[in-house]
Length: 141
Ligand code: FES
Image 1: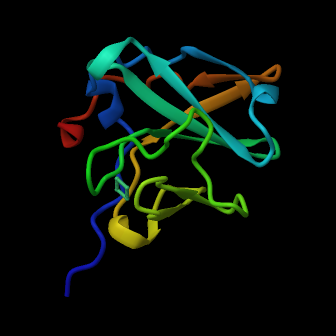
Image 2: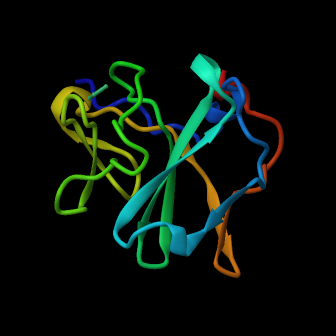
């Protein structure tokens, strides 16, 4: 019996073109609606690196902005990442839905797939990409 693919280890995003450095400042927590989400883009053009952060109260969850089923961005606009109720991450084009807390695909074309997580840290009301815990492990390659 085959189950869902293993949960990503959170390192793959560091191998993407234009990936920001671990520790990079993203912005203030208050810039994100609660509940809501915000896109952060590094670089320009087709090789730009896009990620997003979902906020729920004082908690934040970061993901690479690439759908695991089609490798395209999830959003049509900079802050359009959630369903109407603000309870799940949703692809604007195909309506696949993911759990906010861990990026697991709950419904639609990306069911049983995982969004690629990007670790975050919050301090003094500012969101940073989490500091690296070492080189990218071989399991991410
Ligand atoms: S691109 Fe995968 S659900 Fe839309």
